[in-house]
Amino acid sequence: MPQPNRPQPAGRADGADAPMRPPQTIGVARIFAAFMWLGGTSFGGGTAGYLYREMVVKRRWIDEPTFLADLALGQAIPGSIGIKLTVQTGQRLHGAAGAIVALVGLLSLPFVIVLTIGALYAGFGEHRIVHAMLDGVAAAVIGLTFATGLHSMTQSRPGPVGLMLAAATVLGVGVMRWPMLPVIAVLAPLGVALAFVEPRLR
Amino acid sequence: MSEGSGGLIALGLVFAPLSLLSFGGGNAVIADIAQQSIAVHHWTSEREFADLFALSRATPGPGSMLATLIGWKVAGLSGALAATVAFYLPSALLVFAAARVWGRWRGSPWHTAIERGLAPIAAGLFLSGGIVVLRASPSGWPVWAAALVTTAALLCWPRLHPVPLLLAGAALFGIVAVV
Image 1: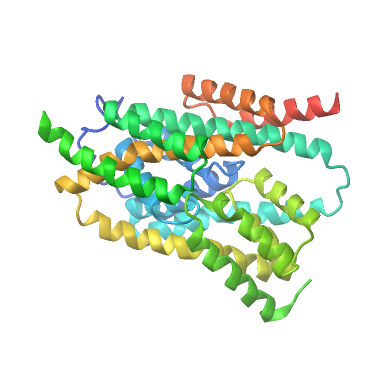
Image 2: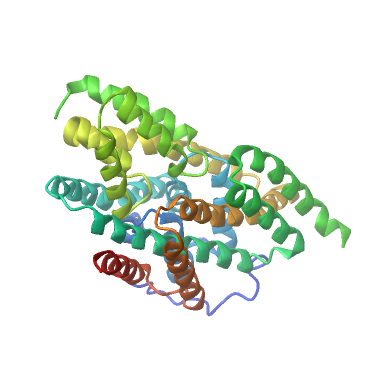
């Protein structure tokens, strides 16, 4: 696959306060190809983690605060996180056309592959080893999800308030397994209110 | 395999509402997909559903290519297309519209506060999703250990491509299952 071929900034000193880069027009063909590659290589359903790695870390088509903002907005909307981030990223890169080609590109290869495997699978009899291998795949995918969450958090410099909000989210949704909607309904307004007040107290 | 347009309409009526109920991602509605496919519409047996679910996890792409597989089972290629569109399009349109409205307010103080306030919660939900899936896994601590090793590897080398890690996980667990 094509590597990013334009010169890249060496690094940003501060993710949260970095100036927005001037919008660059990336053609729909490149967007389609990039998301087709993303869809075809994002094994195990952790598409958001792959998207982060491909679009933020490697290609640098969108920056860290933008990715986090899209992720946060997407959490308030139902649907697959990978699909929502794909639509949002495509839209940022090339408007409505970008969103459409990104989504179609993302789904094209998995669609063909899943039907091919499904057709082949009709003949399989032995499942135990296949299921064990799928568990191994799932473990690696979850590792990717964890790494994305931890890396994003350190990059956005959350401060003590942010760290406590993240910990409260993990405790409520991940550990206690409370339903997500009420947890978010409490924590989201709290987080926004604190983020609004915090800079004014300094 | 084909049930004609009646099957396609039924697929749409099942998957489009689920698309709008899947807060927290496609995995949130897997129990509902199972209920509809097995008990309500008899599209699959329990055994077939478990197989299709496992296959959808072994396939690249967003989590629930499960909808595509069930649509294919019901009505072939047209069923696969109908289920895929029904499951993904409503939430895609919703996020597209939301992002357009949202972008107009960029730069205002409360817009910044909302983005900064929600970001740690989003990161927390990411971690929670992994924890919930790990706790649901029947294989216990080896899956936890492998997941944590993968996490450490990716934090040390963020540009590492995940596919070799997935293949290593599949090979390791496959070999242990054989031995």
